[in-house]
Length: 62
Image 1 (cartoon, rainbow, N blue to C red):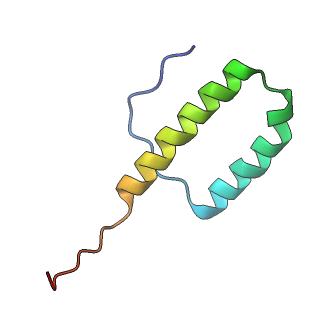
Image 2 (image 1 turned 180 degrees about the vertical axis):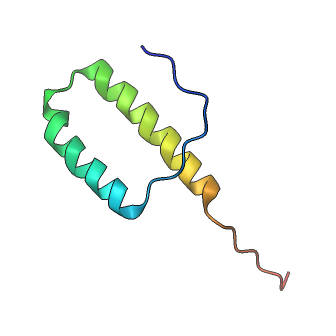
């Protein structure tokens, strides 16, 4: 398995995410199990980073 880059990656825009989704739909049927596991890990990490980049809205009424 290739080493993951440690450089920060900017979150994808909605258009980029949709383009990536369509590309994945084309290639997923050709992947093997270990490829799918690596892909799932990468997508999970990207989603976590994207959630971390979203602005937080705190309720100041507490």
